[in-house]
Structure formats: structure tokens, C-alpha cells
Length: 224
Ligand SMILES: [Zn+2]
Image (cartoon, rainbow, N blue to C red):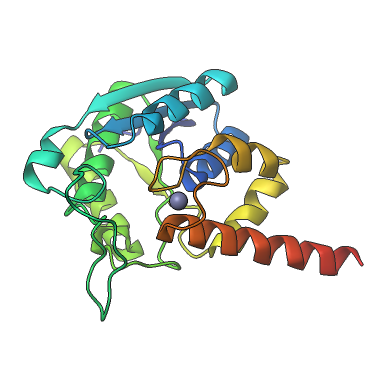
């Protein structure tokens, strides 16, 4: 094995609440931080624009990788107008699910990381608000970490700072870095492509809002 200890990181970055919070988390820890965004022909091109703007504002090196092939393999509600966004019922996966997406993203992030001499990889996946995406589970990320190290003969460390946090705690983390308002205003999580507080109606907005309200209420109680 190479001994490639360095303090550089690649952050998987969509421009949403979770990955933007991860970007701030990484900026606190690593000497060099690089953001990578995957373009898989999302319906909302704004997502990519959002990511671009945030990376630029924060002065972070940003790469956008073309992952259009993912859409050819797994048509889903994030890329196709004729598929409605629906929450999964009775243990079914929601219609926004893209089979294997996180595995593909992390694998490509690792390839980029090695070429950039970065041994740390950061992703905002999380088991707490688990929608049933098997490749967002902790055990999967740990397993891919081992696989990537073997595949590229490199000592990657995959970090998942949000893995056990709920949405309220993710807001708390952003607030810890003094970035709650930034994340609230500049990120795009809404399935209907509305930046900041979003449409308020889609499953993603509901989760985000509920977390924010919960966190702000807790903070208020503490400050009393
Ligand atoms: Zn929404």
C-alpha cells in the first residue's frame, strides 16, 4: 500500500443543504478542499448553477462531471418529466430513487480524488432520514471505502459527517459554523427547483422545513 497521508479532501457536492453543510465541515478540517458535482441531466439545471455559485463564492475548486449515462440506465423522477415525484409507500422506494447513484458518485469522486492527491472523500449521505436508499447506508460506504482502496492502491478515508444526524441536527451543524442563513438562502433541495426555502410542498421541502423549525425551536428554548 502507498502511504499517501495528506490533508486534502474531495466533497461530493450537489448544492443542496446536506452537501453544502458538508462543504463547510470540510473547509474547517482540510488544507485543500475540492468540490465535485455530477451532472446526470437533472430536470433542474438550477441545481448545477447553485453548486457552481456556492463553490465560486467560497473560493473552492469545483469540477462538474458528466454522468448522463445514469439517466439512460435508471430513468427516475429527478430526470424525467413524465415520472411524478412520490414518496415511497409501504416500504417501497420513492420515485426519486436512482439505482446505484451513490455508489457511482463515490467511485468517481475517489478517482478524481486520487488524481488530485486527495485522500479524504466527504459525502452528505445519511441513514437517519433513511428513504430506503441502500447505497446511503453506513455499511455500504465503509464497504466501498475498502473496495476503492484496493482498486486504486490508495488509502482513501471516506467521511460521512451527517450519517447519524437528523435534519434538525444538520441545521445545527451549519449554525455551529455560523452558516445557517447561508445554507438556508443559497442551497437548493426542492424537487420543484425553488432555491432557499423551496416550494414547501414536495417531500424534500417538508423534511427540510420540519428540521429547520425543530432546530430553531430547540435553540429558542435553550436561549430562554
Ligand atoms: Zn419543494
